View (spheres, helix red, strand yellow):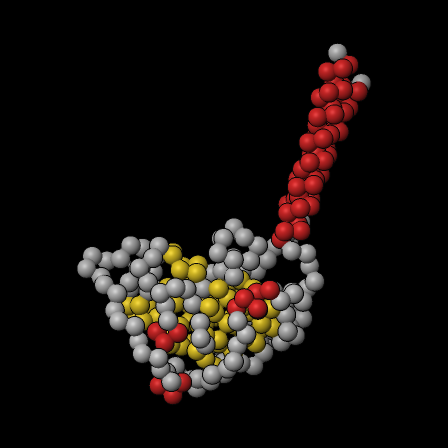
Length: 233
């Protein structure tokens, strides 16, 4: 009897462990990016962003982006976005912000990039701030990570395409933004990225440790079953 029951038990334990691992990470919203000309060295490219709202209690009031290498803040101008929101350049990117949106409303906005870099892909690290102070940090360069940065994959540059000279640093008044541009002091991305989440949840590393522990326990059960089965023979 034991040779039949214990293997079934081990299978049940393994199934339960798998279920724990699959449900340990809640489904998360993401920020997505697309472009009308997703090609290396393409010029005057409209890059559109879609930031999903994942808070049930507050609306988004600001989106901050750290630009990838090869795109300078002076080479980015505002396209369009939520009504009343303003675009502001920062030392390493830009912010788009305004009155807090209705809870559950996604953020749709676009910018125009003077020229995309000669690269296979570009990642736009994004910090999405809600009215209650909670911040979603889409900053991981691993697309399979828990909080992946919106990444735009680029086609190879067109034959004969060359990098153009960078734009001179422009003052807010010289910006091509259709709405007033304001300069706002912003904390460094490193500091923002290390702040504690308002949700108070465990980090991805902690969840990984839990998953490893469960897998070790399952392996121990399977080993014990096989050993006991061999002894019974």
